[in-house]
Image (cartoon, rainbow, N blue to C red; front, side):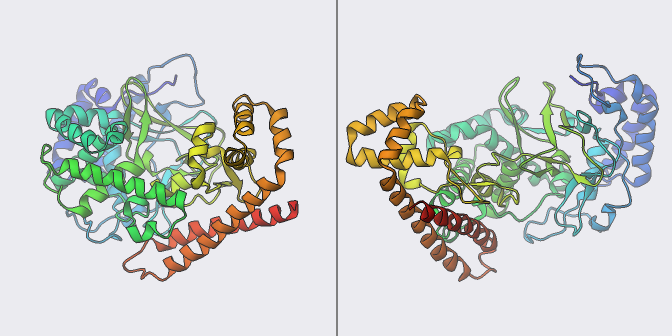
Length: 493
């Protein structure tokens, strides 16, 4: 794979003078709430830089255009993160959803533990609220943009080992509450770890990272039942399912097996769940785990990402360019399937600006979707044109045949499963008008429902329902897309 540094700890312990100097600086920093002054950080980085080139072992035959040893902690005047740094130290303020995020101290914290950035890569914000990583210098395809050593990575597997029998007992309760949560145990472990670190306040080694995170979220977990009632069926189902999963997590934790001071505080538990849910990356080797790498978790979403995140078997995180990236470009990754943005909306609380398709909203046909083995991501409508994907036509025709001609339904089922396009086309031609009428009925029903749901949402007070704007934005996208689809269907007959 890539030539790169081992973790910072391995480096400094290999050089006695560096080790002794950084140990002194680190211990001094801990007593002052873990915030290095600029002079201390500069001295620590300078000491490491003198010997860094001797500790860049190659990890395979595939070389990239630069190595981790060429990464730098330099920043440009553009970001000026100091202006957003908290003036005074204190506990994490969750009472104010719009409390200032201390991203500046988080960057110093991560650098202290060995984070490295490619030249020109920096945090950027134009309002002190929303942050992203951008590059001010060109980055070549395959180049390492960011390296986060395992020491600073939060891992569900490490959390499981740290809490031992306590978390095992809590997980047993969780699975008894809902069998479906067995697949989400890594997320549960991340939530436990975040709550435990939150309880420690400034005594937590992760305090600078925790204090840099958003306080407000707009996803399904943060919505109320009123919010769910204002969403189309598919979006409402996904959002409410996420909220139900959170409720199961909290119920299991409140049995008291894991000793957490804040577990009965709904504001804290919901925040911890959202942090885990919206910032993790999943790996499957050497075992399945969810991990959060501070700084790498600042990468935004794109349907056409320019970066990818990987973790080696030691848990070190690397962000690498997928292709050449020009100066002034945000560094992005994919948060999910770009062809179906509704799951991203439910998990992360926003609609991707570059989404090209929407689910057809045919939740009433879910039994037939399962029978045909079609995935939701294949039942799409183009947001730019309203064009309907072929498998949507398959689904609506199959429902008609099941209810009117079971023998024909069986033959069509076989044709769909075997990709027998000739037989499918024969049935589609024969039953086209019926399928078209059914499709029209569905589209106009969705349009009517969306208008009603949007009007209902707009009647809510924003002070008590702050998630209304993102709900309305979702519904407007559905309305605009289905309006185009209705026009296309009318042209067909």
